[in-house]
Amino acid sequence: MNLESKWLEDFLALAETRNFSAAAVRRNVTQPAFSRRIRMLERSVGAELVDRGQTPIALTESGRVFRVTARTLMNQIAESVGQISALNNSDGRIVRLASAHSLALNLTLAIQTELLTQVEMPMLSVEAMNVDEAVDALKEGECDILFAFDNEHMKLPPFEHIPVGVAELLPVCSKYEDGTPRFSLTRKTVLMNDDEALPTPWLAYSPTSYMGRQTESVRHEVNIEPVFLSSMVDMLKAQALMGNGVAWLPDFSVQKELEEGALVVIGEPYLIRDVAYFAYRYQARLHPSGEKVWKALKSLSNAET
Image (cartoon, rainbow, N blue to C red; front, side, top):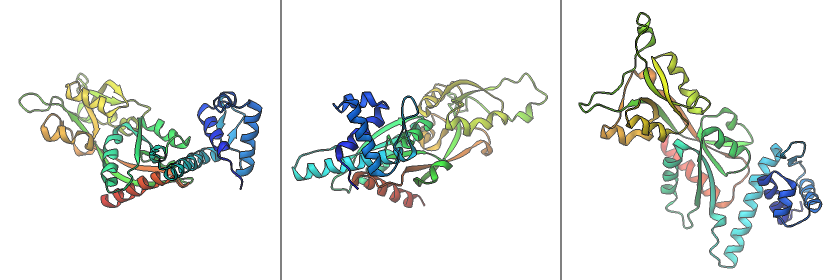
C-alpha cells in the first residue's frame, strides 16, 4: 500500500469542509488536482471514502472509519517528528473526547486521576454536547472516544465499547425552610375522582433528547406538568434549586446537594430510572495517547465491577 501523508491531510480537510472546492483552497491546490489525490487515496485504500452523490458531500461508512485512522496516522507522524527534533509538540498528545453534558465532568476527572502516573500524560480535549450530537460526532470520526448512555447500535462493529457505570435518575426538588419537600408526586390512579388536583411542576428534559426518552413514562404514572425544558442536566438542577419544580437528575450530579440538604429525593422508588453509560470508539487503532486513555477507561471499568 502506497499512502502519502499529503493525501491523508487532503482527506481530513475534505472530511471537515464537506466540499471539494473549499478543501482544495485550504490545501492550496487546484480542485482537479485535489480530486485526483482523493481518488488515488481511495485506490490505495481499496474503498470509496466519499459519497459524491450528496450535497454537501458525505463520508461513506468506510470513510468515517478511515477518518479516525487518518487522524491517528497524522498524530503519530507529528509525535515522531517532535521526538526526533526534541520539540515540545503537544498535537500528538491530544485525545478528542465527545461527551453527553451530564457525563463530561465526572468522567474527565476520573480519567485524569487514572492517568496521573503516566510519564507523558495525554492532553484531553473535551466537547460536551447533547447525547445524540455526541453519538454523531463519533460516527463521523470527529472524535477519538465518546462518552454516552446505552446505545445498542454503538455496541456493534465497527465500534467497540466499555461499560463505565450505572446512574439512577432521581426525582428531586428543593426544601422549605422547615426541611419539608417543596413538592410531592401523586399517582395518577389516586386522582381518578379528583380532576381538579393541580399537577406538580415538572422540570423536564427536551422530549427528543436521550434523557427525555428515558423519563417520558413518568408523565403517565404521576400527576406532573412540564414547566421548563432543557437537554442540560445542570440547567434543570439550577431550576430545581430555585424551587421551580421537580427534576429527574443523575445521582452523581446531585450528590453534594443531597448531602447538604439543598435537594431531596421525593416519590416512591418505582419512579427512579436506571441508566447505564459507556465509552465508545471505532475498532480502528487510536494514536498512542488515545490508546492510553482507552486503557485508563478499562481500568476504571474494572474498578467499578
